[in-house]
Every structure is written in C-alpha cells, then in structure tokens.
Image (cartoon, rainbow over all chains, first blue to last red; front, side):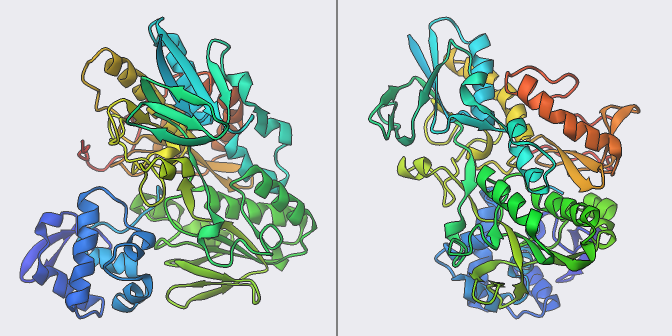
Length: 103
Length: 417
C-alpha cells in the first residue's frame, strides 16, 4: 500500500498505482492518472469509464468481451481510446482494480 | 414425493448427489441428468499431452459414482421452464422438480474466435481442455520435431486459470527430457498484464518463466487466428507467430442456460456469491463452473461450495434463512515441471500467500513455494478425487471456508459479504 498525490489530494494506491478505494476517486483524480498514462480524457473516454465503474460496482469482472458488447464502444475504438493494454489502463484511470487471475 | 433435480453429473453434480442422499428427508427423491456417460478426471487433461497419465486413470463410467437410490437420467437438456418448475430434455423427457441445482459446468467455445475452428483445428491448433483435444495433442507432440510453441489464453474467465501456465512448465520439462528443448521456442500469451497478476505470487514466482526460458506476451486480446500465415493477431495489431498453437479458447457455460433465458453473455448463471442460490428463482441453486461467481472455476471450489450448498438446501426446504457462508475458497496444486509443484490457497479477498498447509507450523505442504512434496500431493489427489471427493466424503483437515492459520498474512483483510 502506498499513497500518491492526485488533484492535490493524498490517494491510497497499491504498488502498481491502482486505487484501493473507489470512494477516493473523482474526475480530477482520473484526469491526472490519465495524463500519467499519456491520455487526454474526452467525452467518449468518460462514457467508457462510467460503464466499467458500473460493472465493478455490480461485481461483474471486466473483460474485452464486456466492453465490446457494452454498446458504449467497440473493441477497436476501445484500443484507440486507451492504447497499449486498454483494460489495465482504463481500470487504473477508473479507480478500480486491474483485471487479475488467481495468482 | 418431493423432487430434487440436479443438472449435470460432473464434479459438482456428482458430489451434490452423494451429499444430499445422506441428508435429505425420506420424502425427497433425487434425480441427476447428464448427456455424457463418462466421467472425466479433468485435471488429468494437463498430463495427457505429455504422456504422463493413462486413459483409464482419467475416464470412468458416470454411473459408477451415482448411488443406486438416485435416478440417473441420460439425455441432453433442452431448457429449464422456471415458471412451471420443469426441465425439458431433447429426447422428449420432461422432469418436474421442487428444488433444482444447475451444475452444467463450462466448456471451450473455439468458434468464438475468428479463424480458430477451421481446417487447422486439431492439426496445428489444439486445446487441452477436452479429452479429445488432450489426446490429439499428445499424438502431435510425440512426432513434433520442435519449433515455435505458443501457449495461449483467449479471454478470462477460464476453467482452472493456472492450467496454461502449468502446461508451459510441463512442456519445458517434456522437451528437455526428449533432448530437443533447444529446438523449441515456448511463448506464453495472455490477455492479463502478466503470467502472475497478484503481488505475492509475482514476488515468489516471477522468476520461473525466465528460469525455464519461456517468453511472455502480456495484454494480448486475440481478435483472430491467421491460419495462412500461422499467426495470432490481437485487437491492437500485435502479432505472435506459431508452429504449434496450444490455446485455451473462450470458456462458456452450457447452451441450455442461454436457451432457458437465464445466463449472462457467457452463459453463466447469476448466483449469490455467499449462499449459492441463483438470482433467477428461489428454488434454483447453482454450483461449480456453471455460476457467475468471481471465484476460480476449479474442482476444489466445487468441493468447498458443495458442503455449504448442501446445508443451504436443507435450510431452504425447512423454510429457514440461508447461510451466507461461501467465501470463494480455492485450493490448487500448480505443476511447475521437473517433479515439483506449488500449492495455493485463497478466497474472494485473500490472495495466495506463503506458509504451510494444512497444519500451522507443520505442513507438510508448502504454500506458494516449489517442492517435490507438493507434486506428490497433486499426484495423490487423483486417488482422493475418485475415492473420496466424488462420494462427498469430507477431506480431513481441509475446511470449506479458508483458514488463516499457518499463513504469512500481512494484515487482516475484510471479507465482503
């Protein structure tokens, strides 16, 4: 566990920089994390972030398939919005844990 | 007579039938349906490609494990009619129930990936999640001179998430023993961010891939297989070449679930993660790989769930409140090759950590550490499966919910309910 400062607030993160408490997330925090990932958040990004936060709150694991069927974006667009590892980048910006396996 | 019906006579269904026969009141009649007359020891599919297990050790008649008092019905399930508490089979049989347990598992769906299920399927592209796939791959490997071996996961969730990693480790051993390791290039391709994704496991095991000279391609979400040029291609345009592709295709729940109008987009049944009652209807429960629980799809999970589900079914028929007890507990051996294995013990919230199992301070099994003893444990487990687990016998000293003793846990974590 470590703390990082985003939007002038101390935020709890794990070693890889993923938020450990979604309650600490807000749009200003997301914008700064996105900047670290080299991404400028546009309206389409926010729609995707909304969708994946909603899935997380309902205990639904995040997958590429879910994104593709979300009606928000298709998979190709998702890659364009979050280039190079879109699931993990979008998760980090959305303030939710990275998709993991059992080990 | 009241009727309890179990759909599927695999690991979960068979264990539940045996448990319930012992505890259900006399007025209850139990039936179980399956389309297959063979019960497979699925962990054996990992060893078959490498000639490390014999056919008869992993295939036995389903009826052998279903007690005579239980009505075993052979047939393919068409659909569940939840309004009328009925199940229709494709052969015209209609089964009524008072309580239903869905235990129809998960299977591979190579048709979900463009180009996978073509002419090269079972020629240069293989699975090892079916008996046929594992056997065909064994025959291929016996003759294979070497080249680019790609071990690939299409998308999560998959049954036994560590199996592809174990396959890579065993492949390293296999080719080394054959004396052709230098002719084989092994690459592990995963949609996740690494071969290991949990901090403690990464710290303890991260060196294994390098040590075994296995290349890693992470964050690879396959779009299609290009069989003309022997390449897999992901949505980001990344390409990996293969001579032999060993893939774990998309895993999906039974089609019957979709036909009954009750699954998610992968045909898994929405189920309460602590009680195992489905969110479909109060008298429908689900267990094992068929559920949408955020637990591993593994036999050990089914085994732990079965003890809690048995109690909850008794509570349900007595009109009592269900126990919110299942914690996602899993306990898995992980083969690392060269006669060694790891053991991991974890649940919904606690990641695998180091320690000993099952006795604090004693073991004899070590958690998250490669030992020969763990390998012997995994080998001995086949006997336990056929002779104890399926019969619903309690495995001594192993509890359905995860025990925290004997484990190196940094800080207590909150168990969510």
